[in-house]
Image 1 (tube, rainbow, N blue to C red):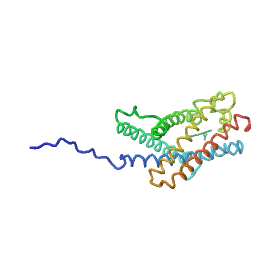
Image 2: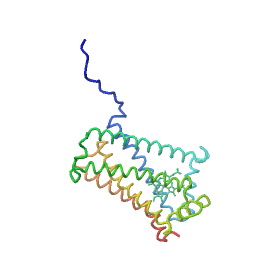
Image 3: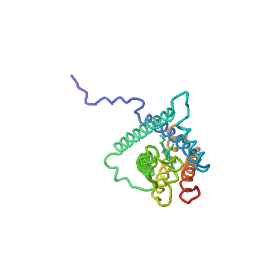
Image 4: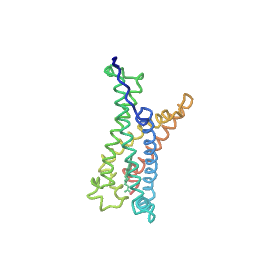
Length: 240
Ligand code: HEM
């Protein structure tokens, strides 16, 4: 009896195909961008004084009450963000491994330079992603769990407004530098990510490409200025 020497191709679910994973990255990335824009808008309330900013921080905890218990909407948002983050990172790792396997053992012989922009972009995305993950851990330890009190003895004794003021004083300039590096990484990540998502979703073509590149740069610039404005104003004593 003849035996087959070829192995049957492994069945891959729709979600695990490369296109499925790229769509997961695009959708979870979009959820993050929406959150980031909302968060940026909230932070800008620092310019309206302590009452406005503390009121906004309280609103995040009270929203939905008494229909739902205090903090429920915030917890739902946190869970959505966590799921989006896990899906985004998981898809990135699987796609990176597949790309590496497809390039084969000669990948290091590929010349770096203009011709190899794809490799440059994916390297920037990978490093940017790792910097952002580390930043999120630092950021949550500083402002959510209040484990690290930068520029003050104990954040739990301060209002949300005063924590921001303490965290970006000139004496703790390195605290500001961490945010500057992270927001730069975020903007590079979003700039390339937004462009690549539009390609995945099939909305881009040769005529639209420069427009989408332009849109991605404008979004990244708005996020950079919007996020860095409050810490920079605090650093230079413009918000007392
Ligand atoms: C200059 C940039 C940023 C500043 C000054 C900043 C500031 C803050 C502050 C003060 C809080 C606590 C708010 C409160 O007490 O209610 C917070 C929470 C948070 N931030 Fe940021 N943030 C920045 C950028 C980012 C970025 C880029 C991300 C994500 C990519 C991010 C993700 C979060 C998350 C997930 C929370 C926790 C929300 C919660 O669960 O309570 N932040 N941020």
